[in-house]
Image (spheres, one colour):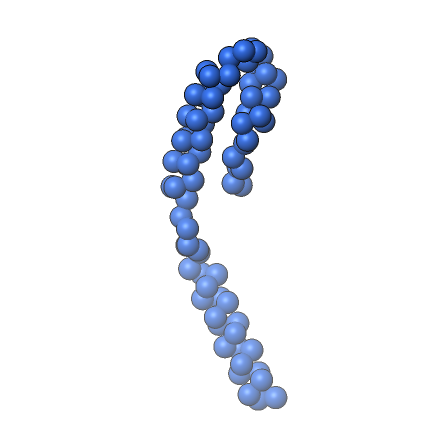
Length: 74
């Protein structure tokens, strides 16, 4: 399942919930958040953008051909 990218405030809240003190440390948190975004972008680039399941494509097209044959007979 694809994980969504968190917004800055949600990222900062997650740090707080994990016990990281972010009070008056906005510049450090911003740097960590930027790194988080870069890491997420690199992760998303490795995901294939087209359907790689070739068997599903052939099954779909054969089902379509069978449907057309039934229409021609009927």
